[in-house]
Length: 383
Image (cartoon, rainbow, N blue to C red; front, side, top):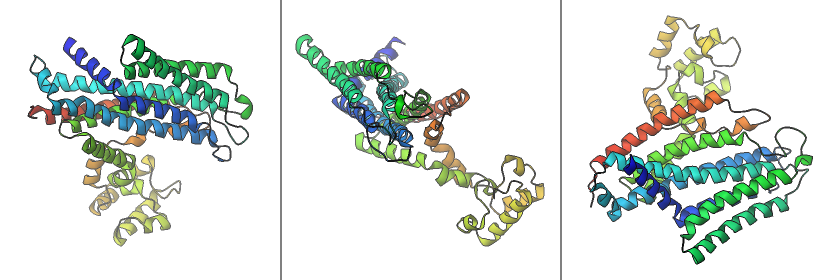
């Protein structure tokens, strides 16, 4: 256990000392707050656009952080021979790789935490067409970031401490202090009429937590790729999984579910569906008999009324969902489950049970990703 903690801590500190990590952290936090001070001309939806943009920046920043962390922590050590020196001691490959993942996950958590503070600040400063950018609050936040760099420079020059890691930790502290100061003393409520506008939106906390779950899955996949690939190929693979996961519902989900639940039988939609004429005719006839609410498709209650003969006919016609789509839909992570930007409209909240289910979903995928990583690493020849 002590060896595991030592390797994980060293991996975390190694990532925090990377210059690219400091740049990624600084640029993302500064850009997130900048997004709250832009005129969107969105007819009153400016705060919502700000929150959507902020969550997107956090997600993309985490993707790059996961790939860079895995490449620096795993691929670089395998290539340089450091991993061989560690594994020559009584340290198993399972302990080594899982500890490396924990170190990457800790760095991602720090990155996402600082960006969350910036996101809460942005939600406080977001304004509609009736408001204007709050330059005073902007100066406080950017001044706090500059102070963090000054602290890092002071420690490096006078105390001979590493500049990058000290600056990263100083950024985490100074941005938090800046947020508290802005949230306490800067009043923007006069710009808005209702809702959470004019004050920091606490609903961003569970929304960002869900994104962190997704980033941990990406980190697990990145570690698996890093056991065999270098930085650029790892980034390519993770980016492909990222894009496929965002479109998972459209590419695989609607083909995995029964056609009477996913495809509408309205004329304009049925015409563009992938079925042949006999399949379309059968689907239209069956749905028309049971579609009580007129939605053009059957919900769970309406589908329960299908007779065994109708179900058999639909299955025989190939309308019961595709096996390949079900496999692909299961294998590819569905990032839409972690993207809850739409839940931040009005005064809606993300329910606690959903967070629990998302955590279990993440745990299952992460277990599979780490199992794949261990499988790829088990017979990797070290030099």
